[in-house]
Image (tube, rainbow, N blue to C red; front, side, top):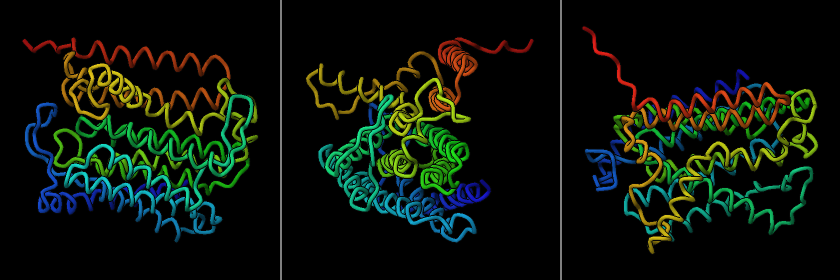
Length: 373
């Protein structure tokens, strides 16, 4: 655990430091978000948060290769992490080009697919497809297709939700921490080595996301841009894919203490990325339906995302982001708890958290402090 904290800290620190350099480079090269009708920021803001976070991930990976315990890990751990770094560099580069020149949707999609193919070519892919009560073996073509679909879907979901200062980075940080807890507890309970690629990647990802937040939280001094949103979505998806390759299906199907949990844990490598990003995935689906019904392209921008609706019902910019954080935390950690633990206490706890989150969403805008007399 201590070495994972080191990985987290290195990623956080390097990302924070590189963000200042990246911001200056973005201003120099004109990679600046102009103010448009559908935007909520009032002044032009530089991009390039993605390269800073990529630098944090690379630094975390290099640090892990020299730590006493993690450095002795099998090549499967660092092989998967290396594949994510290379694929992440590809998708980050696509995002940088988009931040500079505003690529069309098809070109950006092709870049996301290319990053997924690179990861598959380097050996990171689904080994099997966990199903409820069963496991489906995959051949090379099927494994590659499912891997690329999850990567592209998650990258786009995070990209879609990146509409408020600090929103995407904070939500993915919450998801990464939840996934780290799941992967680490799973290793401990099944007597497996604690050196696993999923834990390494999510620790580094959480550090990178938190490291960018001082620059990106409201009022943002820089945006992570498409280079950052696609990178962190890509890394989160790859973490879940890596987990299926390093744990047997029988281990994934057991909860705490080897007992069958209330929600089959073998589904978690697929369900967890979706659950963590339930809000952006739902936002993505609603946006596609909404735009298609209006006769527009599914990728055409508008100002009707969930975070825009929160602003409309009375939340401030900062409160809207915190509400989305609360929902992300509820779904991510709630899914992990219900999946690993059995019995009614876990269900009751999840329901209580859900009610508190709903109250926070709908009652906070109506609450006004009483002014002092």
